[in-house]
Length: 343
Image (cartoon, rainbow, N blue to C red; front, side, top):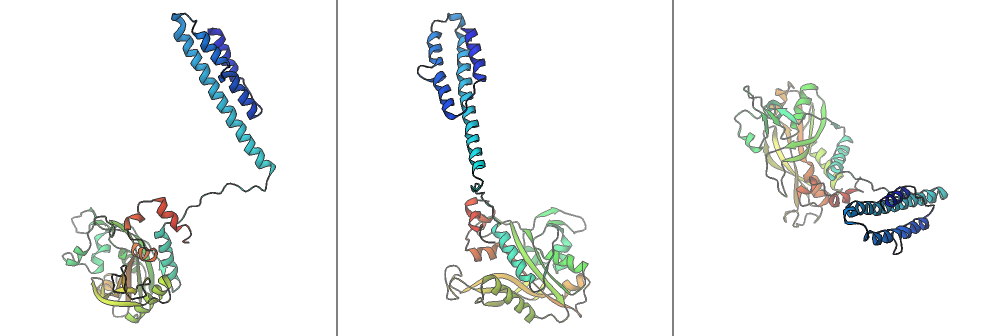
């Protein structure tokens, strides 16, 4: 019986079929109720005890070989049928490919860049790991200034000279590098990722994205700042959008302001999104402090300028009514697929 089983295993390897009906005939011949394997298992009962283990292994090997061969023949024939159908009908449409989508933060970032590029702003970028000078000191943050406590910083390296290496807390560092490198007039925006040591929640994250703007030239006034930001607000949120500027404080601007936009959901009447005020805060801004200009060797008696900064997540949350900041970082396809037509 051993020799017969070895011969049958060899024969299975040579089996061929020209169609699925032929594969079915092979299955019946080997695995059907009256098939070869049923006969062999019946004959196995007469095998002497000392040979049962060896013969049993060969029987199982034959069964597994037959099943694998049948599956292989089926797959080959089904693939040939599909290929033949495509060749026979060249007008048949192909399978639709699922398209990816831009991340909502990328969509909003690109839209902000596009709006400001229309009025002459160019994009500048800088390193995410910065030194204390570009993040703080050049922006009018003296070593013991209490304003440093406004931003919880990730320190990468502490140096004896005090010029510590840090993860930038804002993209204002790009503005400093631009002022050091270029002469006025300067008109730039600096989009990028920033880091602050904050607890992650629906309203805060240790990583987020900013776009900061800077315009320096002769005779730049607060009225110029207001007109530029009003233009941005109307382009981003709609022509009916209004803005208001409230006095505030930032070490690198004087005077400083927070900018609000009229709530586009309630039309300024008050709702749960604007907490009944009719206004939504979107950015900080102000006239560049003369000390900041002088720190970058720009004569503050000749030149003046304005600066502004906004969080991309904040703009995206208002634009798309997203209530949980964490959704932007979790890469949940159910969330991201909603923005496939946003660009």
